[in-house]
Image 1: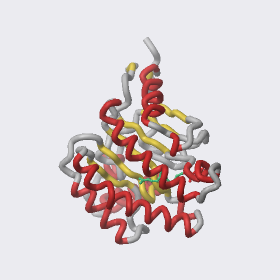
Image 2: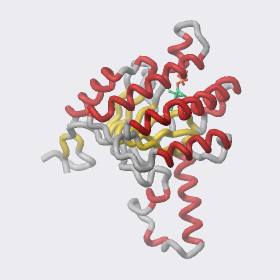
Image 3: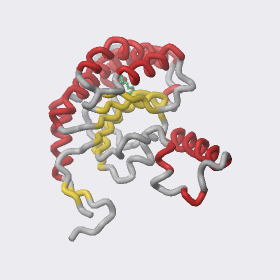
Length: 238
Ligand code: FPP
């Protein structure tokens, strides 16, 4: 059951450090988020050469609503702008985009853009980009449990059939493989409610680089280190 991994199939990234990057330059935090959005583009483009088929990025958490109204509104504007500006390029680069998280609290104009981009890229067969927006691992598991309980109440699901194979079908990520590698930038060693269920056997890389400085070259180094790791999935080495 031991597996020498060459490159990770699915990489998930907690893009942290935008605010500090801007503050270090005496600029408003939102400028850091804009720089972070430019990095997103480059990192998505780097995936095919690195053998990364699935990239999942944490753009806005269920806890991020606690930030100032200015920052939250600025981020929402940035997400809308990113989708409007990047949709064509993402489509042409064969990227399939999906969003995870609870859409209920998001403004309808943003949800329309998200739905439109998912639909537009639904037939693409290249990199699978998943953007976590208003996402929280506990919130996702709670919403899944609610849907599952509903199916049981409706007689559609036998409680005896609930196991670690059936439960994930209720998660936002039901069509995605589990991440092999979770990267967090900016030096913080926390997972902050990201992909709690899905990351059970993931490798973690906490790196000091702030997200706007996370170049494709740094990404390639992290992927290279992953290739050196021995993954055992709970088994003992032979
Ligand atoms: C965390 O850094 C970052 C965020 C909460 C936002 C992430 C958003 C982007 C990278 C922008 C664009 C994304 C897309 C998908 C277009 P922080 O602000 O917490 O940094 P700090 O810890 O230094 O304050």
